[in-house]
Image (tube, rainbow, N blue to C red):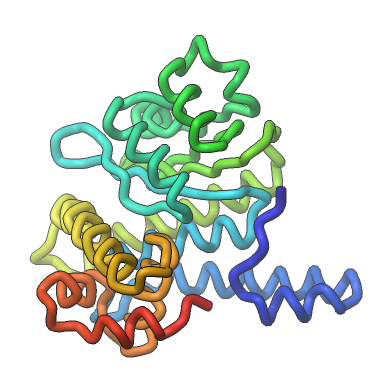
Length: 267
């Protein structure tokens, strides 16, 4: 199953373009992905939004159905920090809570961990494999977020059916993970008064706030799913040049224009 790119205008143009035109369009999307992930010099850098951008790029550019990020926390464990879908989020939360599965192993070993078919790996990760099946995923490729000896988390690439690791996709996925890691670590050097641990902890705290905000938006609209509510929240934040986590806090505090956010659109 191939993911339909979020950039619908690009996808529409590609569907009617010659084969070489499709390749050129994809190369431009890849280039834009690296530029956006490398741009951590801005004053209003938002780590939570940055990680969601990373998983969105992975789904757009790689042959995967979903993606997620686990980050190492200050206590030596891992926490879910971003996911491209509700089902992927549930699986990442389960992996973090049970401290098991390919992604956790990837963080601990700092090496890529692949499962081409989780049904064949139930002995290795019995609880994770069962949870993945319930969430609708059959294969996972976990790539480390690392720079030399610094391992700050793992990027998980999920497929709904058995899938072998394609060398080109794996290389591109690791490159995206690498540039994201460099961006995060670069941000630490730019903002000297903040440590990387504080940034990552802030991202984990912001995720809780965003979860509450998207639930409130979904309940208020009566029609939006939590995933659609999150998309509307993020689109509104970007359109109005607000930090995603700051806007989520406004929603919870009752100071945000909820009607404007829910009707802003999810495209």
